[in-house]
Amino acid sequence: MHFSTDKTLGVRSPHNTKLLGMLNPVKLKHAPIDLKCSVGVNKNWPLGHGAFRLGANLGPLIPTVADARDNGFDDVLWLLDDYLTEMTVMNVFTLWQSRYGDYELVTPPDDGTILNGITRQTILDVAD
Image 1 (tube, one colour):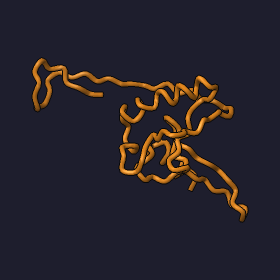
Image 2 (cartoon, helix red, strand yellow):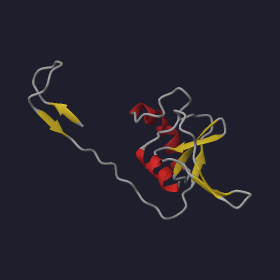
Image 3 (tube, rainbow, N blue to C red):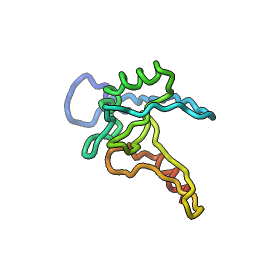
Image 4 (cartoon, rainbow, N blue to C red):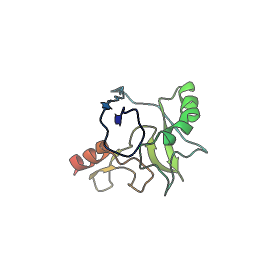
């Protein structure tokens, strides 16, 4: 984040600023993870704000995620009308072999209900 530290509030170019970098630690696991499917709670919905990185998208999910972790799961697999959308802070990809023998990488569509970030796009680009 880059923000002004001027002692006045207004719309103008600042004279003093601070630059703050925030890092989010990621736990890499090379083992299967246990997921609990969401029931009765939606993370995002069409025409909602799921495509944006907002605290308001994650805050209301805390009780559901905490319940899943209390019951031995690593994360929640969020569903919308029985379709996979994403995990709490990770995209979902499935690699399967079609009945014709071709391997396909499948992920939920970018319809505004998932965060279509750089990681997701890079995986899709590399898979092509």
